[in-house]
Image 1 (tube, rainbow, N blue to C red):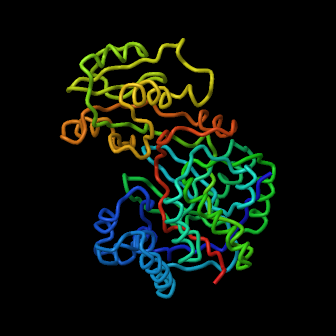
Image 2: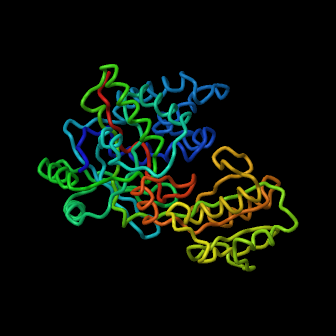
Image 3: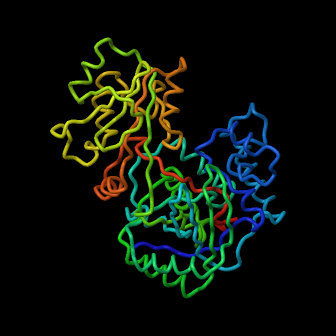
Length: 408
């Protein structure tokens, strides 16, 4: 069983939701955030990336940045741009992109469930990235961005969600980045919130789709507050949005390299792939990887007899990493090696062509998307996917929901 509870959400005043809500802090850099927030005092980047309000010479990890985030949150609350609900509620958050919708339940989940492995992960985290969010949460005394969780489909939960959407008016309804429609409903019926909480007690596990660093950071903040006896009932939980797995879509997470390409490169690849020239720049099937080199696309097909039995080793990204990046180019740690970069599928394969046309990159690989079934299987096996294996779209906007830790 997992614990999922209602909470007193901090959220935008209805008419300001579209102006406040922004992309997640980790998909834009400081300069991009500053440009997007220009002439918009309501932008959530003033809280989530508060360095935009400070001199550019200051590190984005400076203590003053976190203090500014806390000050800006207090200012948003004082001005009434953000308000805190008086009673614990659930919320529904629906995102619609290219005609496909996914609806999540906005709630709080337990740090104990995370530590006990009931909230399962599929990625490693980096401590320096955790520290950033830990400092941010402490300064704001809040979970400032939600964790993107998923669960295996539960018909009874879905029936309640669909019925509530059908019979209640939206709280927010607007269109934002990449023409994604965002709709929010408030579930303020105590019987319904209790019913949902009870139904989740019958769910064996939740899975992190996106937000591993935020999850780890939120749990460490809660544990530290317990140890220091500065905790509250709220600090034992963290802000999450729970989507049924069948509604989610993973896009490809492509790779670009800047490496010396051996003269016999194609011969080296032929030891591990079936190779064919093509005009196709996106992978249409599992076990197919598109490669772009010298203005030419190639299809690299993984032979069936070379597919590993292990769930992680069998992933396309694992095979490419092992047989190309490591064996040919000696790229052992793709998280830190500056000869490789990653391009989310939302930008398309044409972006790879543009990048390879610059002096910065000379080789690109377009992947077939990792499947949700693979993610769940890896997490259930207690294993870890290679870095940059999944790219979820649409992105959950930040600023629509915050969770007050209530320890100040």
